[in-house]
Length: 394
Ligand SMILES: Cc1cc2nc3c(=O)[nH]c(=O)nc-3n(C[C@H](O)[C@H](O)[C@H](O)COP(=O)(O)OP(=O)(O)OC[C@H]3O[C@@H](n4cnc5c(N)ncnc54)[C@H](O)[C@@H]3O)c2cc1C
Image 1 (cartoon, rainbow, N blue to C red):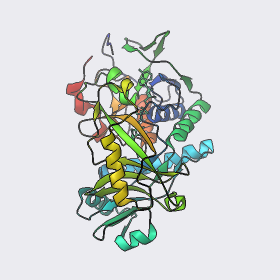
Image 2: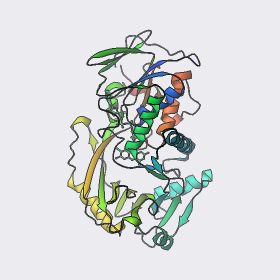
Image 3: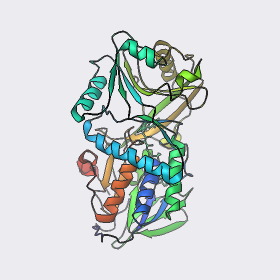
Image 4: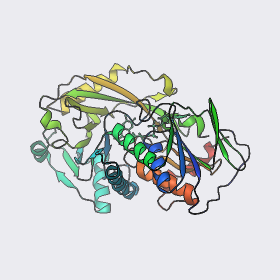
């Protein structure tokens, strides 16, 4: 990003602004929807089409959960996102989030199990604690040891992410947003009275810019490589002997914690089997997102197969489908949402750190508030870009 001259953003409440959103994954499309709802003139650029399978918003399923091991400070943000997800579904007459419930499974003293229980207690959230026998009886998809428990979150579910991006895109288009597919933004130039967005064949002027470039965030955001970096995540699908036991009506999403395997479990959405995203192997860092190989280290696949053989009794422990994606992470694992430290006409919504899908509507709402009135009452301090100001560069 080239900065010709530092500038400050002075909003007039109710004024329509020309806004460019760079990146049309779930964060960019949700931002476009929220901006268009507030009456702004929105143009969304993506280097691919929308949705696409290159970014972090693809892969058949995503988890929504409210009992949040990452911290109670996120919970209201997540609850309000849930309301916005329902608003979007209703506006578009689509179904993208199935409320199948969620389980955190492990020994009671596992830090993630303990964190979920603490979160439920602190905020008095709906939940049930099941012992091993109750788990086996109610949720036979999950194999458990006698000393394990399941913490059931009724306000959890599974997304169909591609349909969700499509719904946010279509609703933003209905409200007047323009999409520019296959238009890579090469440069952003803040000038005194406007911010220019350059592609290979255009240069367009805007009042404000949203950077929602997911795993590509280091390139345009002005954030240093230490502030934002990418990791590779691997998903494996396993066929179910009895699909009915593994459908969302019988199998909640899970955060599984066991000495022989840690993973997120996603119920069967493809009529064949269950997706597992392993957590017990370190996710490798990826320097160049565009060169990500679709062939993953066999160690990942074998570790998922071993965990499934031990912990998912109704699945054939052979990964019949393997996919891989990248995601932008920050050093503290919290997203970066707010005005750029370089120029407050540029709003950052990046570094979602593996969390962003569920609360993307509220990220979009905070972004839209900031562009509309300079600030948002809903912004979370833990996401404030200024915590990394030393990483900002022009
Ligand atoms: C495998 C995996 C599992 C996950 N599981 C969950 C989960 O269960 N629950 C949950 O809440 N979250 C989950 N997450 C996190 C969540 O999916 C992401 O945080 C979210 O999808 C990020 O969306 P995004 O819009 O920021 O990025 P992306 O979807 O990657 O979108 C960025 C877009 O920017 C475009 N772009 C980049 N650079 C440019 C440019 N210069 N010009 C034009 N366009 C550009 C790209 O083409 C891309 O379309 C998971 C993430 C992964 C990878």
